[in-house]
Length: 99
Image (cartoon, rainbow, N blue to C red; front, side, top):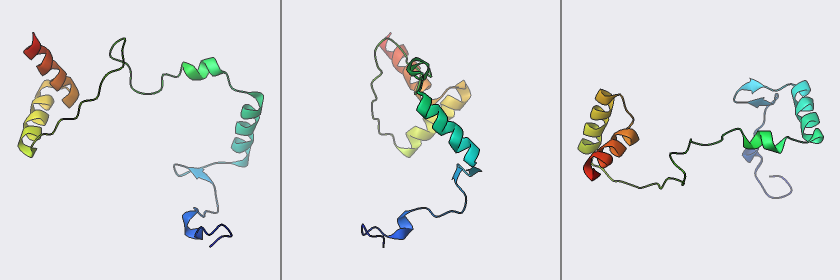
């Protein structure tokens, strides 16, 4: 254990630093440090469009739905036939029902 009482196996041990299995060079780390020290363009970071695209002016609500294995299989089969995702098919079904 280390002096703080945390077992050493908690910390990854590697002879080479990597991100997703791709080695990171000292030059890359230096470039990242230089970029951080120079400051980031906050407006550019905001424009990145992180997350899923919106579906309207207001945030969408997430609704949990429980389906049996048979219902889920039928839904997936219909979605595949319609070349849609599950969510797209469910939204279309709700729109047709509500119309």
